[in-house]
Length: 164
Image 1 (cartoon, one colour):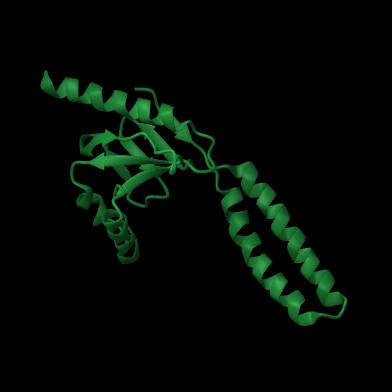
Image 2 (cartoon, helix red, strand yellow):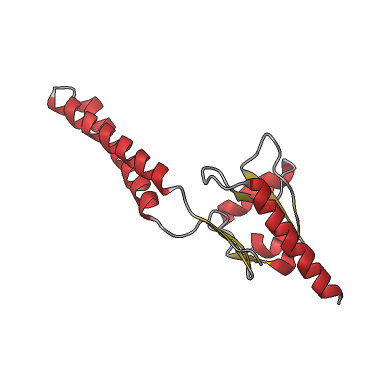
C-alpha cells in the first residue's frame, strides 16, 4: 500500500516562535520604559505562547501516518485506527476542507480510549451531525483529495481480499 506520512508544519511553528519572542522583547522594552504592568502582561502572555509554539516547532514526530497498520492522527489521541474498523472516508466539504471525516464500524471502540473531556467533544460533534473522528489536515499542506483516495483504495483492497 502507498504510505502517507504527514509531518507537522515546523516552518510555520518556527515563524510563530520568532513572532512570539519578538513580542516578549517588546514587553521587556515596555517594562524598561516605565509601563511595568502592561509590559509584564505582554512578557507573561507571549512568553507562554513562545513556550507552546517552541515545543511544537521542535516536535519532529509525524502528525498523520497512513500505512499498512491503519490510520494514525496524533491530534485524535486514539492511537492507530485499524483498517478493519474503517468503513469509508468522505471527501471534505468546501466549508470544512481541512478535515477528512472517517466512517468507522464501531466508533465507540475508539471513543472509549479518550479522556472524559474529549468524549464530551465527540458527543457534541455527533449532535451537530459531524463524524466522530476526522483527520485534521489544517496547516499541513497535504492534499485532502489524495488522502481520501489512498484510504479508499486501501479499504477497497481489503474488502476485496476479505471476500476471497
